Image (cartoon, rainbow, N blue to C red):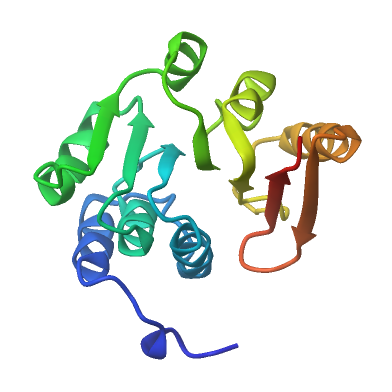
Amino acid sequence: MEDESVIDIPEIYSEIKSKSKEIGFTMPSDVYIGTLLKVLISSKPNAHLLELGTGIGLSLSWMIDGMDDFSKLITVDNDPKLITIAKQYFETNSQVEIICRDASDWIREYKGEKFDLVFADAWPGKYSEIDEILDLIKIGGFYVIDDMKTQPNWPKGHQFHVNTLVSYLKKRDDFNLTKMDWSTGVILAVKIK
């Protein structure tokens, strides 16, 4: 695997990573999922994008880096402290809408345009409201989830949720998917009908 120092990292990424360490944020996104998101988004000009689980904004920095000038991104998180930090870095970007709200409620109430890519990095859109979020993806659009490999910090019983989700996704005939034993364990799916 290539050394992290030679990857085309977004300018703001190291600053956000330092802030993450400073505040003791223990759930930062893996750099390799960031590179994947950037590449996938780069394939979607004039894209409509969604991130569920803004966190401190590490993945968001990669997503923005992959966007063209005509793309729009919505990111949702329920933690006001983390959203405040993310806003310090991205609030002035007119292509990005940062929402502090329970993502389950947001998903159920959303009535806007469907998405070219959804990165579900939170419980909602991954383990709950799965049908609702998959219905919000355009044909040809991507659904991306990470943290599918067993992690030492998982609470007891979490593997069951992962297994149930993977089984469910594999049975859907409106998505093609691949499971990657890479990074933190990634599932990449594309809507085909």
